[in-house]
Image 1: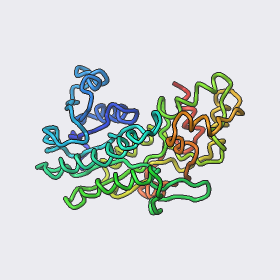
Image 2: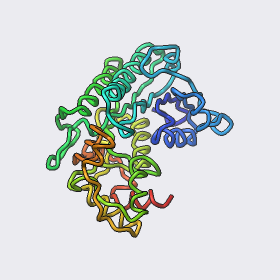
Image 3: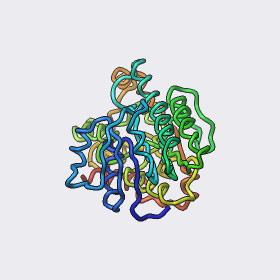
Image 4: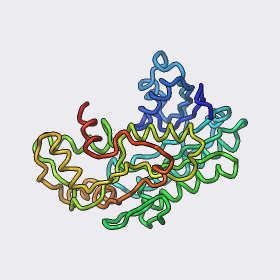
Length: 312
């Protein structure tokens, strides 16, 4: 795929990852079609006079509609949309929204690609390391079998929908995302207690924390976009996962604060319900296929990543 003047459709472009991705692709000179549920918000985040090459298109992610016509003529689609799993309790309704926003949201993107003439040449679709289930002892690579908890089932349904584009001759890249570290996101919620000398590991501290710095994730998405050797499934995680206690100790050291006050399981379960599983039970995930492409990480270790996050 030529690197010059690509036309790229993006969903989830106003989120924690999407905002930075849109900025970077726009700065490279690409034309972007931003499919968004909230047109006003998108215009605030990407004012037309600052982002003249961003076309904002309102859409309903889980429904067919005229928005699908905007996929025709795009070189690529990057589908980042999906209900947040980290905000609030997992009620039955919330779980259904988490599931459908990914399964149906991806199905509608695939439907749009099927109708498009000419078709995009590549779909980049995220999944998550929740695919593997949780474990304190197992090591997961891209070829590992799926788990059987709620998040694993979400990820399997999500990926199954995306796989349909391969029958259309479209290159598919599925990125199984770890916890994204950056100025915002999950780590932003951990920093305030440390500032108040009340930081510490969440739960047992023994659970694995498989992470990736936001800049590395953006660079990985762009590499997958431009390099045809990317095809299939890749773990979007740094090559050095850590246990929760190590993460919190490192954060404490960098902030010159103690890391001794653990957050008990029952507190998180009271706040998040089933969603507490994301932080209470982790998984050790290695990006074997990602490294095999020759991709290099700017932030391969958690201390370097956290140092950059805290510099803002």
